[in-house]
Image (cartoon, rainbow, N blue to C red; front, side):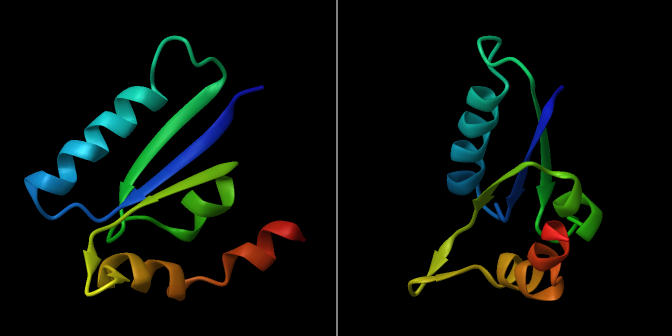
Length: 86
């Protein structure tokens, strides 16, 4: 049975898109079997995306030591972790 890795990211610049590309290339490497990689920008990710995933990877810029507003909004919008356990 395949597992799903959800990659939620806020990559507004080339310097943040480049590491995302490397992460996705590594996660999709042919040596890794049984993992479906789903990549979503933070502004487009949904609650079903999170509930359907088995693992998560979050990519964000760091602005004055804090995650980006786009990713913070996504994480604060859904009470999903407690729903996953039930």
